[in-house]
Length: 156
Image (cartoon, rainbow, N blue to C red):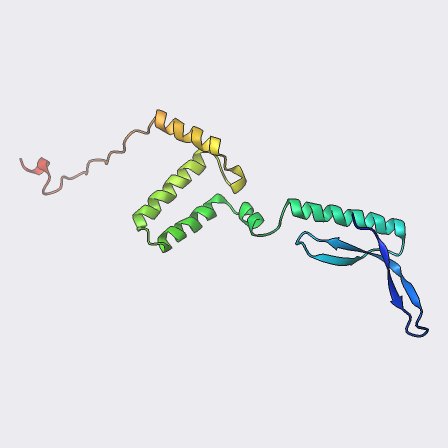
């Protein structure tokens, strides 16, 4: 654990070695870079400031503020839209992109998932198992009001 210290310097007028009135500490920050931090002229206050700084650094390490944290805050609907753009850019047909997006949205909506933190493998497995046990009724097109000219209803 880093300890507070006073910096040494040479007095320009006399050339004597002196110590600064302020305490400093060398601390490794969350990004891994070691920096010198200015604390306080009071040793007790410098120790308190250093412990608070170390606690903040540990919190930053525990919950990063980088791209992963930004992605975790983004709604799943935006992730699905980005995924669809990636599929289309990779050469997928528009029909395939629509079908994949619809399937993903159906799972997310069925499991009440709104963010990346909500995603749970067990919830998805339960949802898919429930779909297999009671499949939805097949969609049937409604009959047109007037028969088409080449349909069997017009033959006779």
